[in-house]
Amino acid sequence: MKIRYFEDTDTLFIELKAGSVAETRDLDENTLLDSDAQGQVLAITFEHATDRAELSNFSFDCVAA
Image (cartoon, rainbow, N blue to C red):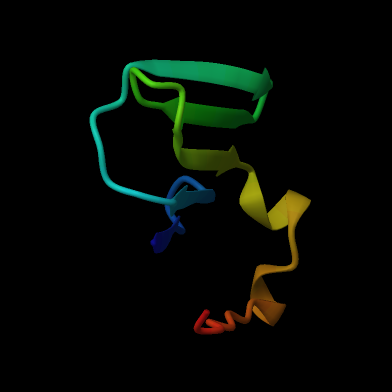
């Protein structure tokens, strides 16, 4: 998983897994969902991220199974 924030465009990109994007769907006017040919979600993109999330309070926990 990769999480990237692009300050110049205020875009948050969350890549859940690598793969070839077969389809990008607009969930709303500022949210895009990328999926592969099998329908697996690969990534989600949030435009205007600072208006939609508290990025200054971002934290990440990884719990092993």
